[in-house]
Amino acid sequence: MESKNKKSRKNGGGGGGGEVAKRCHVPHDILHFSILPRLSFKSLSRFKNVCKAWHDLISNDPFFALEQSRRPSPTSSGFVYLGRCGLKFLSSPNTPVGVPNPSISFLVSHLIRLVTSTNGLLCLYVHALYFNFLCVLNPATQEYEAIPQSRRRCYGVGLAFDPSTSPTYYALVFPKRDHVEGAVDEVKYRFKVFSSCTGKWVTSSKKVIVGGFRWRHQTPVFSGGVLHWDCVEYLIWFDPSKDLAGWTLLPEAVSGRARHAIGASEGQVTCMVMLEDAVEIFVMKDGNGGSKEWSRRYRVNLERMVERNRQVFADFCNTMRLRNGSLSERLFSRWFIQPLAFEGGDKLYLWVRTGNGSQKEKERVLRYDSRTGEVTLISNDVSLAPGEDQIFTYHNSMARLPNWSN
Image (tube, rainbow, N blue to C red; front, side, top):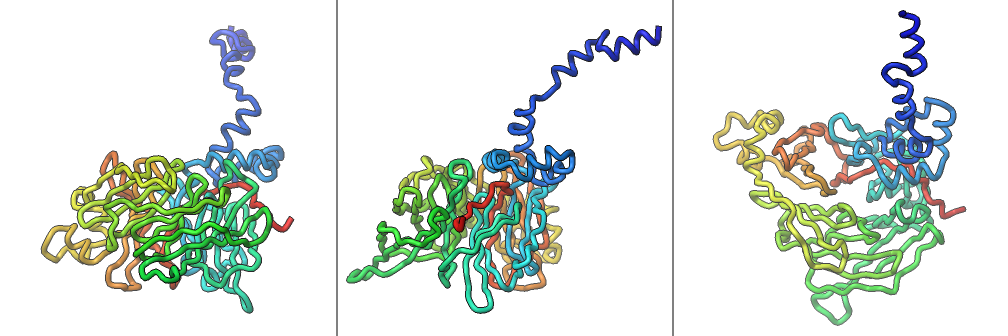
């Protein structure tokens, strides 16, 4: 009797186990090109060792790399900054963003400057012994390209790269700002563009003239095929594929003194603004650089956020417990809270910086969940390299770096 049951189970009899096993079989194309590309980059790096076929698929298949870059896993997203010992990556707990070897040979922190980050590619400014140059790098694949005839200045250089639409093309754009001749209160922007298709820098014929505005050396944001530069009270924008340019005002909540950061979410430009009593997040409605319409998505009361998460803030503000006043008042008297770029979803990221310039105090990155009101400490030991003042969003991408020299 027992042998019959064993035979029945082996052949799929009784409970229909064989049929279940057949139904659970995942077709090759779905597994390899619909499921695996959605996994985190760290998981894919480990899965290379499953078998030779998977190693070749993950390491060498250009279509697989394209699918992974088009639909990056949220667990492959986070932040990158230049620390005192090289590139540093941050991510939410239990979703580590990592690359095979972030300490690539020439990435010596005092010889490079992190210029910008776009869809898995980084742009670096390298101080060589006899000359300086720009470099485009994919930390995940460890591919990099030195850009010919790079400018000595790196402020404001934007990187345009979208593997979902143009996986074999990227562009670098440098906006040049000049005063308008004969005008007292007007400035003119022209754009110098490097294309990976041609390997050359060219100056666009397009120009943008604005009046009475201030320049801010801030990293541009790439969204919907368009680069946007934050100029304190307005954005200037340039579309390298269509050779179009223009400008639009930032939300009214942004003033000359308001701390803010622009980002991108689902093809739309976002603006996260730090006010005296709240954080507000705005989204440009149609994602078009020429649009002047902004809609407010979130408003977070700062005092309520701090008091509701007393333990999180008290842990790194414990020296303030002996002073009078509320925790939020003591926090804001000693620390600056800088918004990081908003990239959609329900999570807001904040960079807490010391207000007295002390190098002994480590800076923190916090995550606020707008649904639950909970604040989570992402990192409490952020230490930027001298001269660095920005943290960039980053998405691990397996997209192959377009090579202009071939």
